[in-house]
Length: 361
Ligand code: GDD
Image (cartoon, rainbow, N blue to C red; front, top):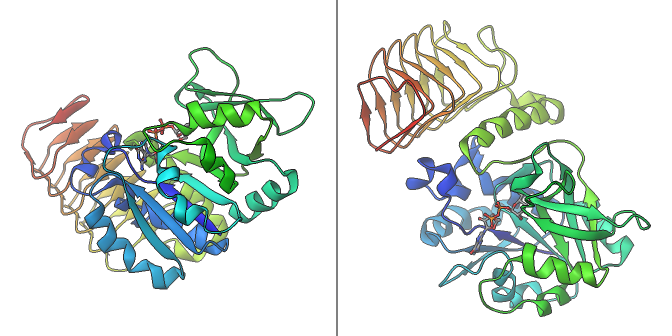
């Protein structure tokens, strides 16, 4: 089987992290985001994976090529000279996606869940239509593509509305599809939206179905959702593979710690925290619902809540960070500084308080 991951876009919503690292390589649960998807595709029997990119492919090629052997897959980079949207990249990768008659998976790169690719493929084969969209329910459907069903035929999609301005329903496109190769014949090699141009044709042909996702789902393409997604992911891990989570007197709830991290026994970590490689956490630190990326250092008695600490960054003694604060790469927060909802660009040093949401350039 084959799969294509839509990796393009500039990742602007996940700034400042994506100013130094392409979004698919930002670590989620201590692994590059895209590896979760590559691993799940490989586990479902996919052997050919196309990464459709238009942003810094050279860094990604270097990082991801080494996983080909680990997962037993061939990874091809399909590089666009201009952004081709969400459908154009399928046409560009036609030679791989049409290399046999089997259907292929398409994934939005920011989406995390317990990817049910095997069940999705079985469901798709059973209904005999040309495409299947994975569906999930959300409270705020207006930022997504909404799926409306045919009343007579369960799971047959009657209408697909991308980013509706009026409420049409709360079952949304989870950004995971399986499509038959002939769907590519509906797409031209130019910037095209699969949601706005291709899906409506398949709906018209009564050939687009939806598959209900079980369990958690989150588009982690922006900091607030990255943190909420981390909570959901850790909760899922606690059920699937509890041995991966940290244990100890100073660990509270679901916490993932890289074995190279050094945590003071007087620090209290969790719930819902991910600590990356070579992170150092000092005495009396309190950290909840946060992610500390590799080589960061949280000094003694700092308080960190709902924050992403970028690679190589330092949080000073008695500092307090909260309110979806995000530090880019190599940021220094001086001792006793308070940051509430600040987004701090790479290589900055912060020596005055940031009491409300702000971008620090
Ligand atoms: N290769 C490539 N080229 N990829 C692209 C391009 C492009 O020109 N433009 C966007 N992408 C990728 C993004 O990186 C992302 O993985 C995916 O396509 C969809 O991104 P957006 O177009 O930004 O859509 P969205 O995130 O606002 O909404 C999409 O995802 C929702 C689920 O989170 C839609 O598919 C919605 O229908 C869906 O509900």
